[in-house]
Length: 465
Ligand SMILES: Cc1ncc(COP(=O)(O)O)c(C=O)c1O
Image 1 (cartoon, rainbow, N blue to C red):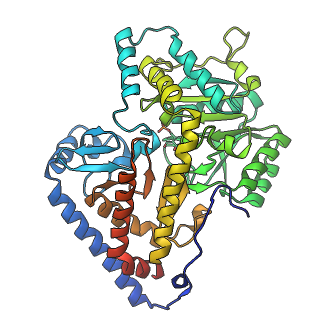
Image 2 (tube, protein in one colour; image 1 turned 60 degrees about the horizontal axis):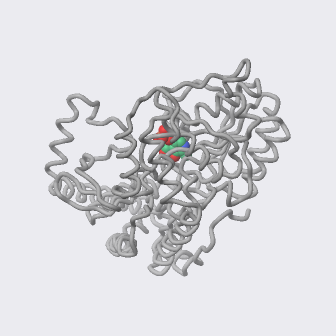
Image 3 (cartoon, helix red, strand yellow; image 1 turned 180 degrees about the vertical axis):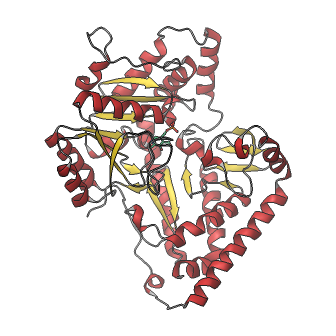
């Protein structure tokens, strides 16, 4: 299988060929050492963050576990943030961090972009919650249609989750079929997620699941359910599942097969739309029937959108008899719409997006060069500004390739980077933002290098265990 986007993959080093048989005692020792290292790092973290610890404890009175967004919880307690500046965040104990969580990709513009702030302030001055269309949603809709090749028309909603719910429901109505095909370890929102299997809170749609990047297996499932299948929904880069690039042949097969059987192809580009001028669809020349968007398109404020061919979207034209009614009090909330307009027209123009992809991809490749040079089994998966650090010498091509050892090393990476002033997601994702300067990127690389320097033997032992 040819890889889709990866432009360069350092050759495995001599060390990667070494195998060493270690017995079960050795395995236990490696896991015990890892456990102690994590405990020790958490102890240092707790000592360094008394204000966050107290805030977390108090919050548990009125929020279950002190938390209203599960992904932000980690042991022993999360940091409480006081504010942000450019590409940095400051916590309530006064520590300053390079923000590589980047609000899981939504904070593309960082925390103080002057153009976006001015647009939000102006919208606030003009009035919010007007209960009528404004020029903002019309302008933003036009900008999105220009940007994403398959999107003739678009509708706004409040989140990426809602965008996917709307796209899936639309596919069911338009095709008159009920079955949907998604991928194991895919993530399409809080009630449409398949990370490690089906989730108890998922919407009760009739989902079939296939393996990501498995061309033959997926084709067989599509054929088997052909007449019942309303849609295939796919992330062109499997985000939460490990920032795994979709294989070009795999994505083209989905386009071909869905056409053959009359199902809709939905590209979930909620995260990947930031990659280059036209998202992944623009990069690989596939026109899905529907595309879902969110995250950065609201300039850092909450929004979501689903759009696609005129033929599909016309079902929502309220002037037509029998049109589908799509509701949502805040679908066109003016602050998000105004911020999105400024973001796409003045800050993240198509040219700028192309340039940012090149710069951030150079950074990702520089991490892989560093990992290869030090012969540590680590790899920065993903593309451009969407990166996930895996404990492996090779790029991860399928979620099934992520080993238990890799998963068990993540809390150590997360904690140590945090202690070194670099915020990353608990599962090892990094999202780059526009205000990151060369100095931020060098510091981030140095933090990872220090982690490698300190833990390389432990990493190797754990992966062998
Ligand atoms: C690919 C993908 N789709 C959908 C969503 C859901 O978006 P939201 O959190 O805005 O509901 C996410 C969120 O991380 C995502 O990564």
